[in-house]
Image (cartoon, rainbow, N blue to C red; front, side, top):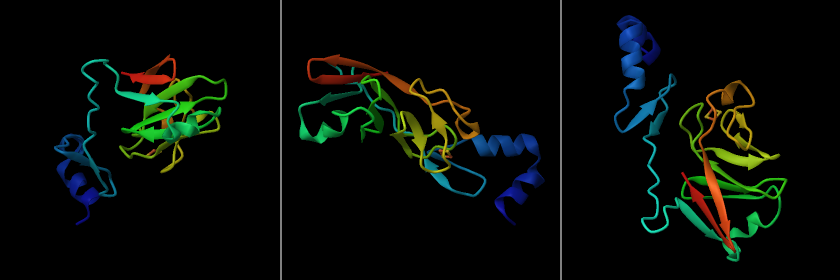
Length: 146
Ligand code: FES
């Protein structure tokens, strides 16, 4: 018996409880397992989830508008207006860590969900919106906050 058939035999209430009660992770209707999202702990001194030294060669992709990098499960980008923006790498359609930045918006490589820089969904796969973070620039240090 396939998972979907099994859930049908349990009824809608039980199926909901099984589908959404995730201990240590979740599965979708295809049986794909997604590990539980790991919380990003802020730096105890600065409160930042992430700090990037923009003079570091590892952050070269943030020198040009439209560039991005992924670090500590955060997608950090410089939008086409030159503003730094940040969002989670984890998609809101399914909990897959497939978000990138392209064409001045966040994009999921799995099923093509699209989100603007404020995290608002731009298509049906993005309807649950995307968690975004605040950014702060102090000299050459870019900090990301919850
Ligand atoms: S997992 Fe991102 S669009 Fe489906």
